[in-house]
Length: 512
Image (cartoon, rainbow, N blue to C red; front, side, top):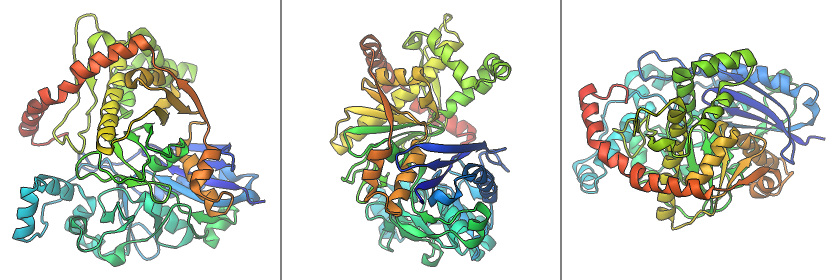
């Protein structure tokens, strides 16, 4: 009986390949860290050979499939977002993938007529148009590598790359089309010539892949891939890592928030109403047809845990080697040592600027002689949840919605202490993905819909998700966090913004 799904989760720092049952049980899982996660040929660049991902997938998948080959009916892939691959007609990559955290900028050579420029200037959108155009890596490739652009048959997301390698078809899910691309988020299709994004992110129509809804069967695996893996299965369209995570947490309505405590920390919800949480930032296509995932991102979110570990937790790193325990687990002891509120130490976690604050930098304020390492670490965790709370409040205002609960996934959610801090800072009950693989569960839900085990993706998610909790707010801590958030954190950015701009001028954007 073909009742299992093979799911590939291609993250920024590691890959996971899982074998999942229709009840959401993870029967086997293998993971591997990329070494290195990316290459920087110049400061701020981040590239990786996509074939490295493919080779790791084959290695991990073979170990996962051993003994289960005949039961696999579907394969689905979920990947990091805004990471484009330039392919030739045979699905071979023509250059390394430029990852989402790459900071190179294209030249501004956009051709608009005087009337269009006047309209966008009067609407206050000209600066936004310049920024997003320059941030689009496809514009950089077109300008700086015209020979690659000319040879390119299709420009796809990493998900499209895997689908092409597995099936030979240039097809991808609408729920994976997130990034600086000519995609109409409201209508879930490629832009028409009337849309400004058609000009901002111009790709000739023939270079774009075909789009399908999540849960659509794309086709059988190519014979050579099927033979190498030892399976006879269908490829099914899924979605981006964050969208799959939101589905895997069973956040199917706009009274719940999905928090991803990963390299990029995000807050999402699921709604049938189209609204922009931040001006000019569309909600992303949801995994359930007709839905959207409004989102706020904290770039370099729980990456800050790794940053703190590498820069200030040398003792924990040494102990982790001796005890064969992850250093991040030992950092929980620092959270125990520090009081809620970190004795007035407040972190603004913008180590990488956001879309609505391009000049921002990170800040830690309130230092005094009695502060120790543990206060700095707890302040970082608290600061991330202050920032996520700010995003949730924006989402509530813009969408005229109200959250009654929060569900969390991602690496940071593995810590009980982190989840307890989240509950008190957000002052809401928090539920956690028990299996720790919400993105893979979401992708598997799409896979099982595709091969007919469930009638639709929402039904699959309800049956497959497994949450624990709630973690309730501590009333005393919640009151303290309320004061710190409203009286200090919310005022930090406006007070520091001018200084950030001065730093940007002094360093001419270096490191920002």
